[in-house]
Length: 224
Image (cartoon, rainbow, N blue to C red):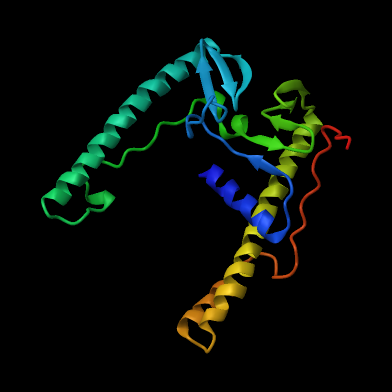
């Protein structure tokens, strides 16, 4: 879901001419890619996050991984049973039941291991370098760890950038849906009024005023 949101946001940037820096969110086993460059991958007790070697798992982390695998197997079985129950109901001519009416409870995916939290797998991409976890990378080469003050600076940037994302997305909706689609309903129709109310309820920046991107941390210097 987070990945989809970022893809949408990037589209908004180009549509509004506000392309800037972006941060990429990934999760444990959430998306399969060639080479395993997204999320967490463990092989021979070695942990790779977003394709970068991170560390060897401790004994307790290995136990977490083993438990996660068992939970994943159970989750797949539960999903299979849940789907079969719905299909059986439809074959018998019944209407799809709500989740609360189902005999089999809607399965929940297992919790990710602690070493693959959202914070650990978030990747901030800046000009010339990127930050993952508490490390600075140039390409896939580890450079150094963030200082305490730099970690605080990054946390503040994250909050500001999240607010900026919401503002850009809100303005994009107003620009596209308000200006282009609103004209289709001119003449006081109920659809036009509904569109107008939806626009007024949006808390984003007013149309025509571009949201201001936060200043990016200077963890590296790009020479161009």
